[in-house]
Length: 232
Image (cartoon, rainbow, N blue to C red; front, side):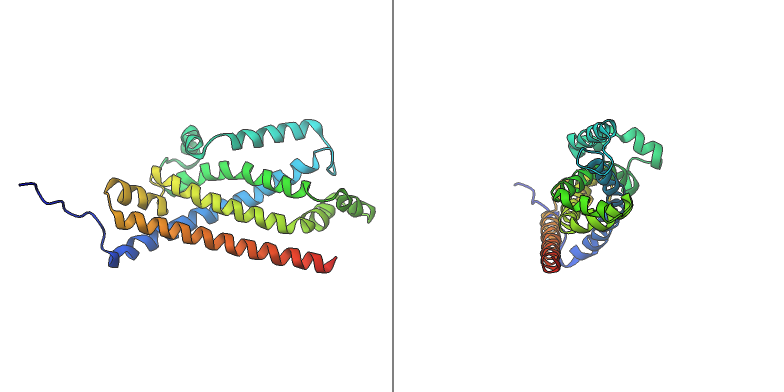
């Protein structure tokens, strides 16, 4: 007689006791990462565009270096990058597991990705935007802030939305190193313990979260474009 198979599934009534803390950890990771990514990646993207021939301060050598760094940072899949910089992560945080260990590779992966998005957003602007700012006597910073970034705001919001979705996906992958969050829950409970309820719950939560972020981002972009069109 075959032994009965004992179910490993967490009761649906108890799912929230595991899911809510994990969901909070995911957003903690993503919030920390996005603060660095938007600040540093945005700055790199602005310099990358303005060091190009169309920019405020063309600098071929600087543009080539930054362009190479951005391309290199975007070349490696996140899982490979996460493993490759383990020594750097250890040196910086003193650990290779948990949220601190996940935040470092997520930032390293997110900065070049967002920098390229910012550069592309600025590149789509008509050359007259920068020219008008200069004719009005604005300084470089004033032209960047009041002309370039202001005119590219809808595209920049779309870039933030796309990057935010990517960071949530990266946080799920970071669960493989015990980073916590939804990904860790899916790996430990859903995969290793064959807990189908947890796996289904994590999939549903991730899908709903990303759909909601994309919906909000698209609505903001639409409103900003309408506002910009009305102003012009």
